Amino acid sequence: MCELNVIMLSGDKREKIMDSVAKILVEGDSIQLTGILGEKKTVQGSIKEINLSRGEAIILSK
Image 1 (cartoon, rainbow, N blue to C red):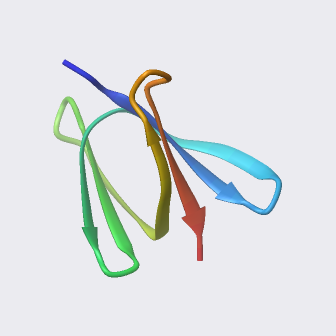
Image 2 (spheres, rainbow, N blue to C red):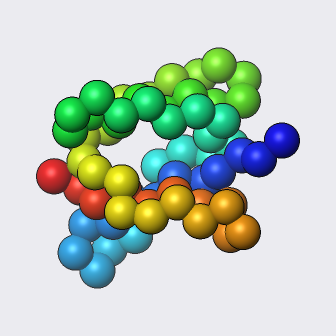
């Protein structure tokens, strides 16, 4: 299974907002993250990059 760490990018600041994300659902500016244990978090922004080899998704803050 491939889980991702999700990073929020705001200018030069990088902040890890969730570990072990198994699902990312995008609806407009809203991004819902779901972890491997079912925990959910919704953030505002847009996806800049998903890099599976680094296990990382980058979201640009709005």
